[in-house]
Image (cartoon, rainbow, N blue to C red; front, side, top):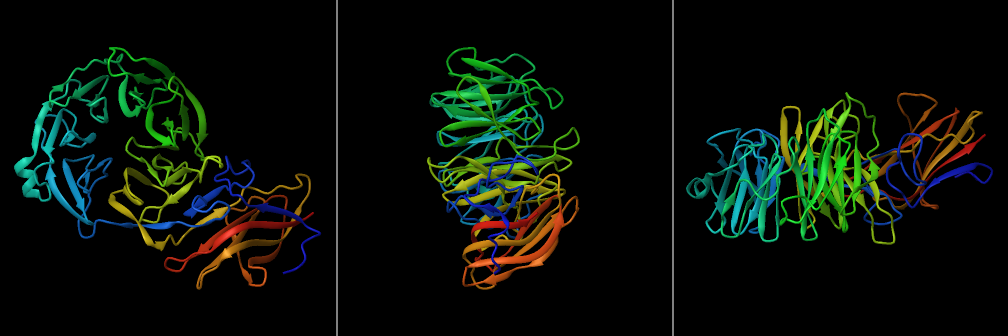
Length: 480
């Protein structure tokens, strides 16, 4: 490796997640981070595990936006566009039931386990099945399910979020809150009646209260976040949210955050009001929209993960993102998509329900007319991981010469490698250059004379089965 002391060195270490844009971000951040992991070992970057289709020969023919991990260890996946219900147990999937509501559409818009029963909602009806009876087979479901157990008052077509708080199951139904108590008494018109046209889209427990996120319409940038004590007939606190919907809640440790609108905004909730927190980097416009669905957040190893779904135009890459930190000594940073669905695509993808079972991760997805449920494969790394830097402009008035790209590694297992690439000025594609392994200095580097006012670097990871490089520093050597 040549002596670089006379060059201007730009170095990435103590990696800080995604930058805010192609041009700006915190020191140590990257413009793109696809399929890489900076959370497991602070100060290093490696490749994430792969998501693989988990359903075997069983066909999932619609997006499952709602799923429940039951106390018996099984997982129930509900179709959003039909009445189908799949049960997974010990890695085996089975279509166990098809809901036929007496009125309204059959797609599931909410579900929860409560007091020995599994409850699920369709547009007009609430259904249930006792968990005390065996529900392992379709015959069990046919014998024991109670379809059309009760009728909703408002019959919301899309959302019936559920949360258990204060010993009661609360169910959103348009602008009112329905409930089921411990005596299995259903109340269609509960205590809380929000002002029409607010629709309850998502719920979260908050201390002894419930936080409610609403939607009016995707064309209306005016909705509310409410905090309700489940006792009064009005919300304890309410605040106008000037976005077209509060879409999903998630937890950053003990802090509740809300994804609102269709341009990637996350807000932090303090119990009374929302404060702007983070925007997912992307190109947002009326024709480029995305959101996080209500069931698409979870917590993995103490970090919040969420699925970003394309609505139109692919404004940002889709998959499972992470808001994470290693401990309280580190800031929360946004990375992703960390996990890419088994279609190996980050465009035209919708992410439905996410379930975390211990450290196992299950993800429902949609790709056009193709659907599936994936599980994180701890025996295989993702094969197309890459990072891209922001634009490097050390001297805005003059040309810059890049002479070397490098990555110091902590480990480089057999049959793994890196490929460096660069863009200069306004190139639309990367030019790849082969890495050289300097084993004495445990460094991969590539030398190339690249002249341009603006230079950008990409690193693509080559993995081998469950092995991948682990990097501790990345850099570019520049000469004016």
